[in-house]
Length: 594
Ligand SMILES: Nc1ncnc2c1ncn2[C@@H]1O[C@H](COP(=O)(O)OP(=O)(O)O)[C@@H](O)[C@H]1O
Ligand SMILES: [Mg+2]
Image 1 (tube, rainbow, N blue to C red):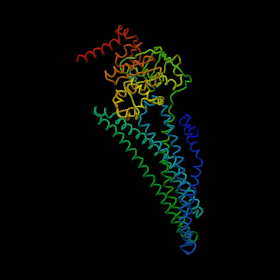
Image 2: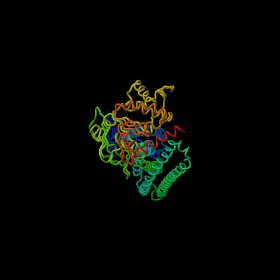
Image 3: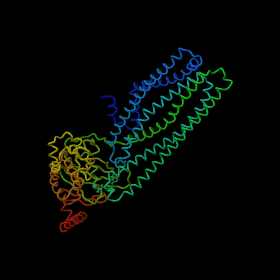
Image 4: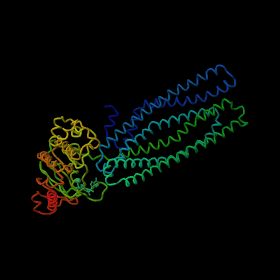
């Protein structure tokens, strides 16, 4: 394994990730040294060029020395050829390191994304996260390669030129050096503001893309419920804020650079006045003076870019913080070390209580029940009563805060997370497909090794084959982003096929047939019955008729189990379940008569 991969294999927190990044950058020491060499040579060519002015003027123009006159044009070209090579080596090497670091950082972020807890996903808007991947990380790259290049290169240029100027005339240089600290002070003062503003701009960029994303995702709802004005108003507010922040940043930039230049110009005027004064007569030749002025003006470009490199670095730091804050998010807790090779499928909930992280209210309270191997337990209740939350605790999408949940007598926290999830197949209400072929959507993740025969068999059982077969490209048909090219019922049948293919000992059906019409549901009911027959099933049903045969029915209300028993028992009890049943029965009756 190469060292990069090894680094990646470790799951590091943000701070240690930062250290790891530095150590990754240090792995390219050779490149870095080469880059520094390029920069030193580059800086020296500038001094050489300024130095060339002295013999050119004193010996060439004034004394008309023949050899000097011939050599100078050659020297000029030679200096610039060397400069070209030096600049190439420097730029390539620095960019190489920057790109390596960024690539590594991005992989790390994606690793983190895959391990994020479900509640982090609930909290974060996808816009904010994708901005981190696209925008923030490029900013980091900017500061790693180009800003760092400027920083080192221009400092070297300034050091080299200043040394030369001091050597040429310390008196003239001294005047200039008074201005230096002043410039430095201004730079430090504004840098804090830059950093602050960059952070806020980044945050508002995340919001901008978040709103756009939301409108794209829910465009039908926006259209039909006339949300345009509301969304536009929301967007305009954020867009206005973004504009304001950007203009503030521009103002700060536009003021700081000319201010620095003004200070430089004043000291320049003083130098000219001093050099031409009587006391300097004879001490400084005209060649010296021109060479000095040349060197001095060569100082301005690196100074200018150094005064703005700060923003680049500040932006990079702000972006880096946003990236590292993301990398510092907690992973899913996975401390279990036990595994279940052959699950029987016995599930027990004991006094389980749960509240969503960051919420006061308890969503589940005192949930206890037992499911024996191969039994089916149905969970019914009004929407919002906590049914989905309850079943989501089993694959540990969320961690329960009270009580315990056991699978085959082992508390699920003590099971290896991957092993636990291997035991469970899940079909949800809201099926999100991947922008890929039907085949890859059915045989997803750990199922990717399945043969076409197996996939087709699963599709047939899920009554999905009948529509897949009719498609010109069959299993290779692309489903479009989030599966928009299929109907809701078709998507759900693919999800059922996926669960069938997984063939896990525990099955969770969370309103799995809600997107199907009664006709298709009746069809698929057979498939589901097959699916349930030899495994433990937790089924949440919106139509009570589909759970009449369950071994046990749990009736939920406000996060508690208020009734339990078989269909017959609950009807006799004539409580919550009885009322729900009567209501649905009369609805059916109405629709049949009407
Ligand atoms: N991700 C979440 N974060 C915070 N609260 C949630 C979340 N999901 C659901 N809830 C709340 O938990 C309660 C139960 O929701 P849920 O389990 O989805 O009910 P059901 O599936 O019975 O309709 C609701 O009050 C809902 O607002
Ligand atoms: Mg639900």
